[in-house]
Every structure is written in C-alpha cells, then in structure tokens.
Length: 217
Image 1 (tube, one colour):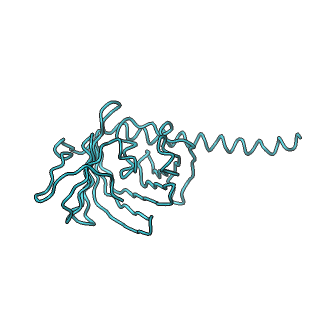
Image 2 (cartoon, one colour; image 1 turned 180 degrees about the vertical axis):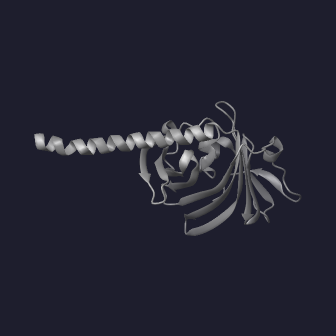
C-alpha cells in the first residue's frame, strides 16, 4: 500500500504543477488583454469540416468593452477580397461580395465563435471562462492553454490558445463536437490603435439588404 502511495505522489505533484502553469498562463493573457482599449492584428483563418477546407486572411480591428460594455470587432478580409464581418456590440453582420442578402445575427446567437476573441472583448477571466484547463509547451517556446468554453459545451469540444511572451495570443483553435476545426493565427499585434465607433457601424453596399439570419459556415 505504501509503495502505491509513493508512486502516486509524483503524479500528484505533476498534476498540481500543470494546474499552476495553466493558471499562470491564463493570468498572463488576462493581464495583457485587460490592459488594452483596442488592438489591430493580421489574421489567417483555416476551417476544416463538413467536407470543406477553406483558408482566408485579413485584418482584425477590436475595441474592448470593459466589464459591462459590449466590445466591437471588424474583420476585413483580403482573401477573399471584399469579405467583411462587423460586430457592433449588439449584432454581427456577414458580408460576402456577390450576395444580395446580408445576415444580421444577434450577439446571443454568435456562439459559433466565428470570432473566438469574443472571449476577450470584455474583461477577460480565462480561468473562469474555460473549464477543464490544461497546459502544454511548444517547441518554439510558446505555451498552450486549452479548455472548454463554459456555456458552449454542446458545440465546442475544445478551445486552445497559444500565447507568446507577455500573454500575446499567437493562435486560437476551436474544435467543435461535430469534428469541425477552426484555426486562427495572429501576427503583428498593435495595441491601442485608433478604433472609432464609425469603424464598427455596418453599412450595406448598394444593391444589398440586411436580413435576419444565422452565422454562415
């Protein structure tokens, strides 16, 4: 019996160390993003699911909302050119060139994590927002925090956040319960850039109209 207990001690210490490392990484990410008022960053998005593979890229502009206010986002795509996603704090608008109808989706229905940075739009508390936290390192020296977004357990199997020094997010991977995988990589983050309200006001292009809809795949 004693030998069995001794064998369990290193495992217990290792688990405790992993938990401490996960908590420290979550706190580092929280500290970095809670200090920002806005940011701009280049992104690449890769989607694999339902027999589809798609890779897109562009620039994300984000304005924080604080504990009570709603944050805002603008995803301007360069590939495919002209594609746009705008979240004004209440609704998300998905525009793709060539389509006459533009879906408008209320914030409460944007649970597909089209923008996983929605976790950081307000006051980030990753250790509370994600359950079943795990920690791992990468060959490049970054660290990975993984967990299940609370309230999205029926749809999201895992969200993994890769961060570099100072808690700067390099990559987000959303693994859905149906096997779909959404991967976002980020490069060249710029902190506290100008982010006027007008940048998050959606204006439908001529010949199009806004309709109530659901997030596209």
